[in-house]
Amino acid sequence: MNNNIFKEVKQKVFQSSNPLFFYMGVNAILFLFVAITTVFIWLSGNNFDISFCVREYLGLPAEISKLPERFYTVVTYMFFHEGFLHLLFNMIGLYWFGNIFMNFLATKQFHFVYIVGGLMGAFFYVAGLNIFPVFAGGLSGATVIGSSAAVMAIITATATLVPNYAVMMLFIGEVKIKWIAIVYFIISFIGLSSANAGGNFSHIGGAILGFVFIKSLQGGNDWSKIFERKSKLKVVVNDQPIKKSSFKGVSQQEIDAILDKISTSGYDKLSAMEKEKLFKASKD
Image 1 (tube, rainbow, N blue to C red):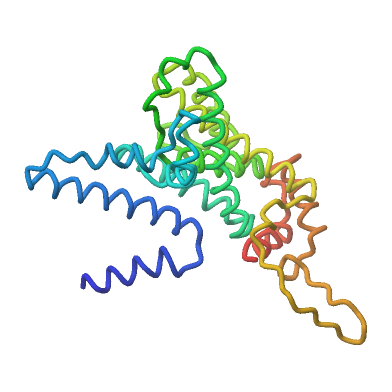
Image 2: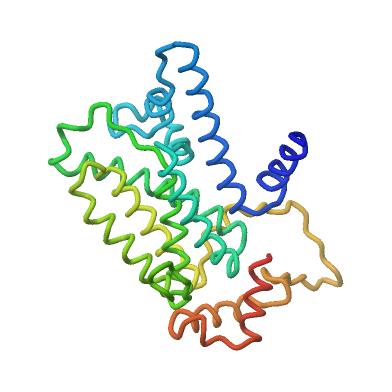
């Protein structure tokens, strides 16, 4: 039975080609590894603090002088969490908005927004704490961990793409996702004056990346193409170039037109055929 569970988790996280399952799975696995290891260390009577080591060596430091030797933390910081609730709320947001994202866009675009959103969050964290004088006295030893910036990038990108897409919320009812993203952003901005100012700087960085990526995509520039593998071979038949649409059965021009319509009128105004074209495009 345990072997079957292991195989199912392995298939879902690492072999399903679904980036949503991949990032949720990796974050959960790393959290469980740290939490379970902490329990065994505590039971042994050892005073070793693994949580401190995670923050110190895998968290992103605020001090610029530490970055040359901890350069890898711009990536590792976004896969570890402070506690269960920190992980839970990030994964709920990622699941809700990630599913909507994947209904309209491609896997490589999800990877780009998540990873680069996290990197942008890292930049804003370090820059914000070092630029503003009010934080000068608290840089020593300050670090940040969590996938919040990457998740915020997915949330904002999704809300920018289909702002009038509505979801049902407990005690509230139907809410358009643009309002959820706006509330998250406002909370993060207000939080710049709180004890978690650095974390809120990273949220803002992720949100800006998500917004700018979608606006650029709607303008015809897909930044996620840097993740595409370029073929070294060229195939020519009768001297006529082979035109390959970037979407299965749907041209890029059609998709651009549909995205423009979503931006101006909302997802609900799409025809059944337009929704079907978006669905096909999202499977590329």
